[in-house]
Image 1 (cartoon, each protein chain N blue to C red):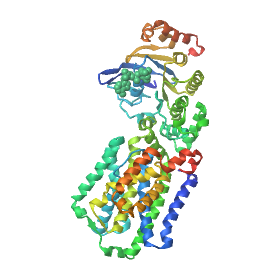
Image 2 (cartoon, rainbow over the protein chains, first blue to last red):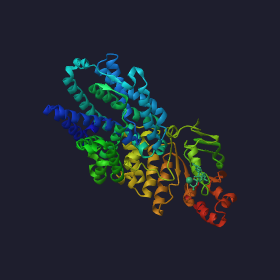
Image 3 (tube, helix red, strand yellow):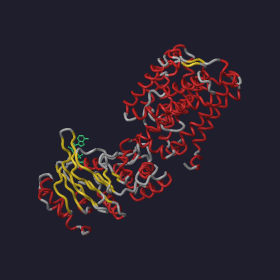
Image 4 (cartoon, helix red, strand yellow):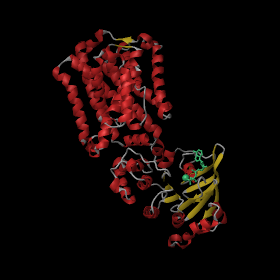
Length: 324
Length: 256
Ligand SMILES: Nc1ncnc2c1ncn2[C@@H]1O[C@H](COP(=O)(O)OP(=O)(O)OP(=O)(O)O)[C@@H](O)[C@H]1O
Ligand SMILES: [Mg+2]
């Protein structure tokens, strides 16, 4: 990885766009805007992470939210029961998610296509059932934070801003990480796997190893932001932590923006959350938002399978260099 | 001896695709592998490069027993191949396709040096102008050359070419044969599956003939061309076979 590669304008346009979006609530100092953008930035992290597996490697994970939920549980357990502070708990949440991916990778990355996708759903459901019965994590009632905990971070109001800043930094970091991975030898191996796994092996790509690391890499940051999300939330319960429909929404975001591109998942996350925000104000759509997400996914796959950024890249090959 | 195949048999369910195949190959040679459709030629490649594990027998590559190793392990030891049915990485550029070959093959190159090798190899096979095009957008002749370029970029000791001439027009065939000869001059050993008889007979040092999975002849092109069993195996039509094989005897490159 040479530093000259980081001079790609497309990367910095993406970073600056997300940064401006993230600075907006800080400038206006409005909590409601902050909450809205927080959700968007969280989605940027989750969608960009998923993209490493889905977009670069070509493995569809329907249960990616399991890493978010597990990270949240591990983090909150350490904070509430063990009295850890937020920082090491975040690291531990990311580590736990990465470890889970490492173990699962050995088992299910041998499956291809829809078999892998099905297995990931199974894992999310199995994890939910397991934690439902896991006493240290509070079983079905989950874990709740004592309000006093926020005092160590300057009170609840300050803590919310602090968490917001961290998520903003993670979102920016994740975009740079996506780019670095995509332009690395490791990333090239992943894309070879996506295009034709057998041909990649014949050319010497050590596919089990590459796939496993892609899976681990795509799991860590969701684990970290899981800790932040549930720390901010104040409590965590199994149904909240392992919401399958969030996995599907993440797929929509990646597909909408353009899978396999650096900018796409971020754009898709912003676009989808924007759309969802509009729909949620309507009572009718509130109840059928998942159906809307599903329909949207279907429409994208049918009509713009490459997603917005992918479509532009194909339509205007000259821009390919600027839209990594 | 760069490659030693000993007593290899391969079944697909009840079908015996390879029966007791034994041969060895000297470094720097071109071995032509011929035989009627379904004779087991591609299967033999698949056994050599680890796609299939043979039911019986062993494959030794550069004095290492590689039977049952993974394809990527074998690739990294310096064995590259092209596919009969081309397998371009469609959504990657031609250049990136070739870089994959250079990055993950024998030399385990870093991206930057792999890029240099890719540029050189694309020039060599005549794809330099297509470098930034998506591989999926190439025509069949170009895709065949891409298969070749990816394999070459790995700088293999042994190169397996599976019908790189099939589907090409005469001028493309001439160009491809020229490339094959140049590769051999660089010291790379080649096994070449081919139906274009004139071509394979003119470039090969040795020819192995498979029929229904069994090796029925092994020798110089001239020896094989005059083998009655080979002539018989080919379409059961001796005159056609003779016609196909004849030009080999008056090729000047033949003496080695
Ligand atoms: N994966 C497989 N499963 C079952 N049968 C197979 C498989 N691969 C090859 N075969 C069978 O094995 C036999 C040999 O096939 P192979 O592809 O090796 O022939 P070939 O000599 O390469 O023929 P061609 O000249 O047509 O390419 C054929 O009968 C084929 O149908
Ligand atoms: Mg074949």
